[in-house]
Image 1 (cartoon, rainbow, N blue to C red):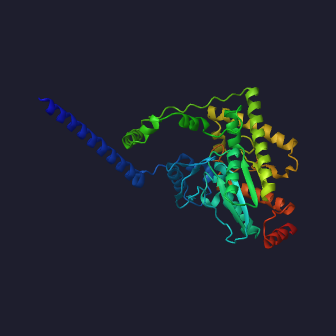
Image 2: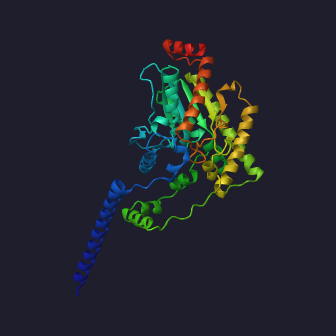
Image 3: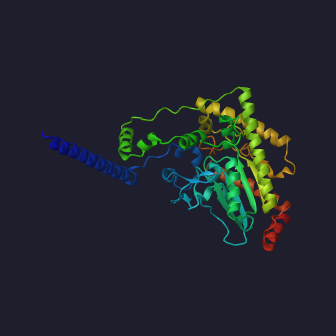
Length: 408
């Protein structure tokens, strides 16, 4: 064989190999698309939680839409790091700004403007659009009180109070103006503090984001994006073969020094964020409300058997003990060290103390009926706040409406 023939053979093999690989990739992408569209009807195990037993909507469909929205990934946002991408389903809807839809809002242009910040519990993991905390709050304010109100759901999965404070600042920079701002926090702030007690202001997933930022190429992510690799995982999953590495739980230290450091960090960050938001409230004319949220192991709720099982895995139990210690310290500080003029801080950790029915689908997230209880308490808090001090920018008509509800 001549040198020219060998060269032609070599390039022919390269060309054929390239065609085969590209063809295989295209076929793999088609297989995945068909599977996602017509055959993937796996149900999230959480959909069977007893907390959903009274739901009047399709719970498996809720979780299918939740995972479909998740597959779209997150969008980068300056300073707040991430928001969700737009998604439109029958139970979950996210607009072009990454905000979850809120039901029952007033169409009146002079309506009271309430912004609710928080993590996934505010966003509404485990609930349809109509049963998130902001949607229940809008229903109560408009339908039960007759007070024209629009509520924005500014919650996002894994957000901590520092991210929410920055997001508030960014919204104000964009020319938006609220009348009432609610921060609904606890679980994420405590979780982050137990992971990085010596780093105030940390956020969830900081180690992963730091790694992505500091390394040039994430080769593992590149391989995972190839459809041929995803098809291999798809085949193995249906054959019962698990290719994932075992999840290694972050080490949780039960020693008092670590617990005290975590509790101090969580409390200090939350109080400092309150100071920052309170300053913005004074300069921009809105009422700030900070709320410490319920958490399954920390609020004294009578546990339904399904909720007790959530705490049985040892890794989960260790994490729960740690966060419970943080909760205890923060709540004690709230009770004994009220911020000057600190009527704007509220402890709802024990809200479900008299509720024996199942409300939790995991240690952090409650279903729609639990969200309704939270919204009911938040509405009472907002009512007391507004009766005490009205935001300066509301209309005279709205001021009269509020005054009428206060008189009753």
